[in-house]
Length: 144
Image (cartoon, rainbow, N blue to C red; front, side, top):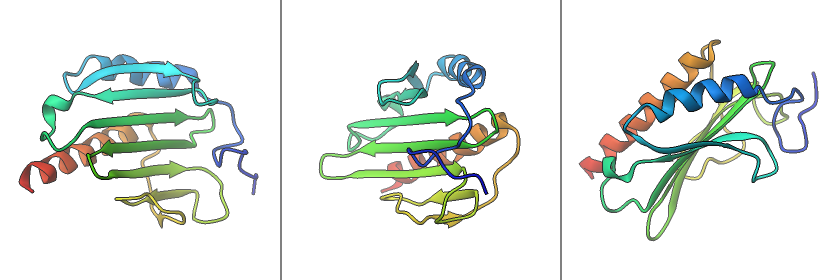
């Protein structure tokens, strides 16, 4: 087993062309306010600010960050900010000591260890799965 990098991610480099592909796709949707490739956190990632018009007023902020590696490992983190708490989850594929390579850190706090899972092999299918789950989450928020 290849050890994880210091950030708990993949030992492979970031796949910038895949981040650029998703940046272009997400910028074309009305649900996304902003999609920027950044290294502000010390790691190259796609940072997405979701449009709050799709959320109830109880949500102050909603964001998604994507790191995709050249070996198809990834970390995708969804986070909502509410006045009195945050709510988040994470879809991961990377070597680690706490779960299988494919795993999910469930809401509301995305704890480690997470739950073992199985994700599609194609990056487009993974993003579709994540966006579908975020859409389900938004529907749940409106139903509360």
